[in-house]
Amino acid sequence: MLKSQEKLTAKPGAMCYMSGNMQMDNNYLPENDGGVWQWIFGKRVSSTIFFNSGSDDGYVGIAAPFPGRILPVDLTNFSGELLCQADAFLCSVNDVSVSSTVEPRPRNIEIGAEMILKQKLRGQGMAFLVGGGSVMQKILAPREVITVDAACIVAMSATINFQLKSPNQLRRAVFGGDNQLTASLTGPGVVFIQSLPFHRLSQRIASSRSVAGPSLRDNPKFFIQIVMFFFLAYVMIVSSIILTDV
Image (cartoon, rainbow, N blue to C red; front, side, top):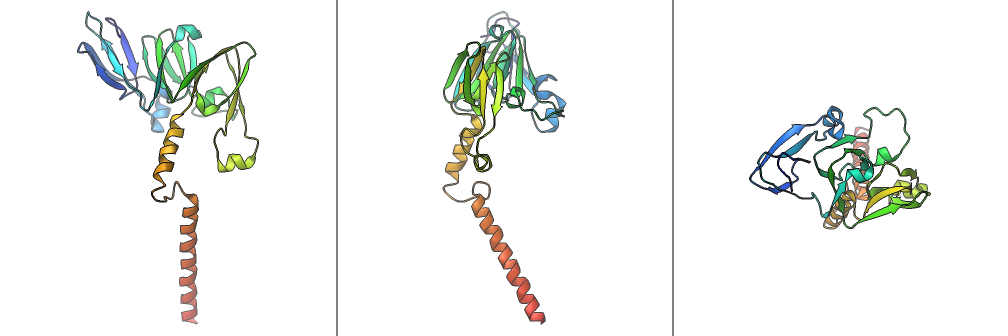
């Protein structure tokens, strides 16, 4: 719901329906998604602005891009700052800015919360985030520690101490597996945890699709077999040419 002269900023394509007194426009916001650097690497740098120019209240229906839960978050309860995943931000009302926490030219390789949670929300307005599957809000007391799958973190307070844990086994890191990267979070603060990250959902869909027939991307063993077949064929052809010349 938007009162008169209020605005809502959303990702392109997030609008499902809106009232007749709303005006919609696509604007370039330099602070969003890292600006020109992100545009060069194929990211969207424009946002859709919905403005209520009438005297009556209006409304905008915002839909999540994948099955999940939409979380309304008042940034005033988080001291005006919140870290979130790159695909978690959906829209915001009034004074909220979205900036990238990843430098285009990193000066060090230290992996912290800014490298995993790639966006930072600032302001005193209302932000709406989306999480896949079920979403739980966990309030951490001072010095309380929780270990979480890094991909399952939707957003968290800037006051939380974030430490990334490397996998214990090299084989697990090379050949993959669930919960490969875990993070140790130390309070105080609030963290939102999702049960089904979007990339994990897409992997499940891709793996179920690959059951019908093998593909080079989903079945590396099949790719190696194809390479070996062409290599043996090449050796046989070259050998036959040499024997023929002799």
